[in-house]
Amino acid sequence: MYESLLLVSTKYSLITGFAVIGFTMWFSYWLSARLTRGRVHGSAIAILLGLTMAYASGLFTGGSKGVVDIPLLSGIGLLGGTMLRDFAIVATGFGVNIEEIKRAGTAGVTALFLGILSSFAVGAAIAMAFGYTDAVSITTIGAGAVTYIVGPVTGAAIGASSEVMALSIAAGLVKSILVMVVTPFVAPLIGLNNPRTAVIFGGLMGTSSGVAAGLAATDPKLVPYGCLTAAFYTALGCLLGPSMLFILMRTMLPA
Amino acid sequence: MIIYGVALLATCTLIGISIGQILGSLIGVPANVGGVGIAMILLILAGSYLHKRGLIDVKTEQGIEFWSAIYIPVVVAMAAKQNVFGALSGGPMAILAGVSAVAAAFALVPVIDRMGRSPMDSPASQTKRVGG
Image (cartoon, each protein chain N blue to C red):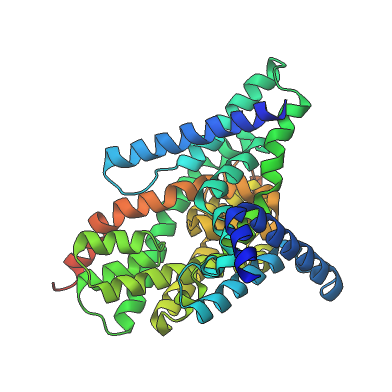
C-alpha cells in the first residue's frame, strides 16, 4: 500500500504539494481565527508551521532539504523551488505603482549598501568575539551573515576551511529563517507599512526567501517592493565579499 | 484568454532572469544580478503599455493574478524545504551572527527612511529631528 501511495505521490508530486500546502493554509487560517482572533496573520502561522515541519524532518531524516527529504512530500520541493517562487514574485509586481518605486529608488540603493556592510560588520565582530583571528575566516563568517549564498561564495574565493564555510551557511540560514518569523511582529515598530519602507527593508535584509516570506506575512501588498531591491542584494554581496570586504579585513588584521 | 496572461508573465520572467544571469557573468559573480527585479519592471511596463492600448482584457489579467495569489502558498512550501535543523545545529556563533545581522537591519529601516526623505515629502524635516 505504501508503495502504491509513494508511486502516486512521486508521479503527481506537484499536485501532492498543492494538496498538502492547501491543507496547511486552511489549518493555519483556522488557528489564526480561533486562537489569536486574527491577530497573528494566517500566513505567518503557515510559514511557522512549514519551518517546524522542516525542522522535524531534518531531525528524523538527517537530510538538508526539509520536508522534501520525506519521499511522500517531495512535490513541495517543486512548489517551493526557485522556479515557481520567482514566477510568483514577478506576478505580484503586476499591481505595483511605478511612481512609488522611482520615489524610493535612492533610499533602496543606500539600503543595499548599508545592509551588506552592517550584516558583514556584525557577523565579523561576532566571529572575532568567538576567537577567530585570521582575515579569511572572519571575512567568510561575516559574508555568511550577509546571505547563505554570499558566505560560501566568498569563502571559496578566498580559500576558507570547509568548517568555516559550513558555519557561514548556518549563519545565513538563521538570518533568513528569522526574517520570515519575526518580520510581521517587528513591522509596526519600524514603520514597515508602506512601499517606501518595504523597498528599504528589502535592501537591508536582502535574503530573498526571508524578505519574500516576511513581507507576505506582514502585508502581501508590500511583497513586490521588498523583493525588487532584495533581488540585487546577493549579487552585490558576492561582488563585495571576496574583494572590498576581504581587502578591508586583511588590512585591519594580520594575515 | 488566460494563457495570454500566463505567457506574458512567463516571457517577462525568462527575459528578466536571463538579463540577470548575463549581467552576473559579465561582472564575474556567480549569482543572478537583479533578475527578479528586472522581470518585475518588464511586467509592469508591458502591462501598462498593453493596458493603454486596450490589448489586455480581464481574462488575460486573471492569468497573472492567479500566480500572484498563489504566491503565499509557494512561500509556505519554500519555508517547509529550508534546512532549519542545519541552521539551528550550526552552534551558538552561527545563531548569534544571524540574529545580530537581522537586528541591525531592522534597526536601520527607520534610519534610512528618515535620511532619504526630501524636504518636499515632509516639511518638518528641514528642522533637524532629534531622537525617535
